Image (cartoon, rainbow, N blue to C red; front, side):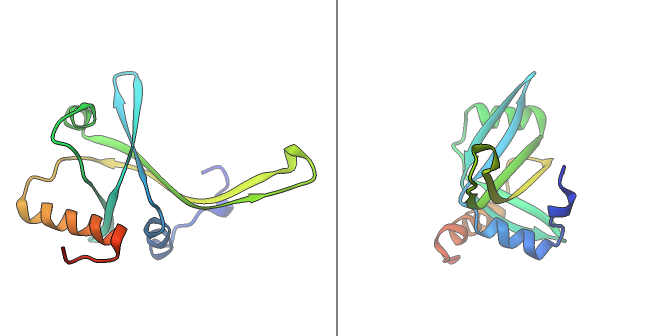
Amino acid sequence: MRRSDREITDPAVIDDIIARCDCCRLALADGMRPYIVPLNFGFRRCGGRPVFYFHSASQGRKLDLIHRNGCAGFELDTNFRLNPHETACGHSFRFQSVIGTGAVSMVEEPAEKVLALQLIMQHYTGKGTW
């Protein structure tokens, strides 16, 4: 991060930012070209490590790339605010974001699929007992 004075490392604060995000952008490598897709998501910490769950169709480019590469980048953002100024170049924009990389794979076990869908629904509806 270029502005380390603005970096947040507290997991509780990071989790709060994630909880306020509506969309997670998943970045995958397609040869020498990036492929980025916006996704709905659920989130939890498992052993202190962040785990994201995404709902998806059972086939398509995204799944082909996940199977081929097994790694991804991600980005979430929220809390946007324009900081106006007298001059155009003086304007700035504030927001909070979480960016990272990690392993990506398909959830195969039925119990974890249920958990994943519960977490996704909890994130968007506030209700985790579907």
